[in-house]
Image 1: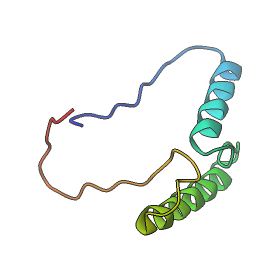
Image 2: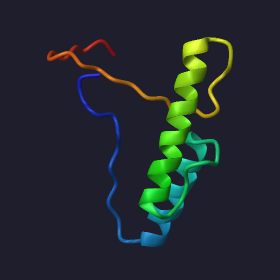
Image 3: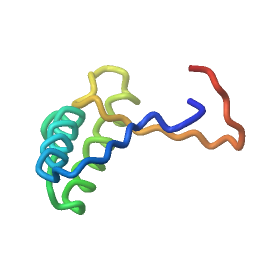
Image 4: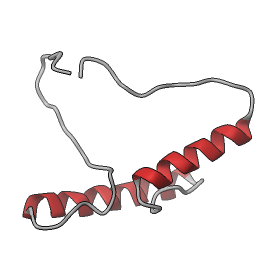
Amino acid sequence: MEADSEMNIAHEWASVTKAMRQRLWKLHTNGQGDQDDPGEAFDAWEDVLSRNNKRQNTGKDKPIASLIAFLYDQPTLKDQD
């Protein structure tokens, strides 16, 4: 991707924002990373990423959630979407 695909939405209902964030994070972490505490959520996401990385490296098991780590360490951008 040439740009970040995350969509940012601003509105005045914090309760809606919180519920949407929890639903989205729960979906992508298979219910393991929807904590309100940022530190706890970070640790949970790290655990999901680590476990999925191990599963990806073996090629035998499916990911535990749809969240996977990625790293692009090249100095150039490519538009290949």
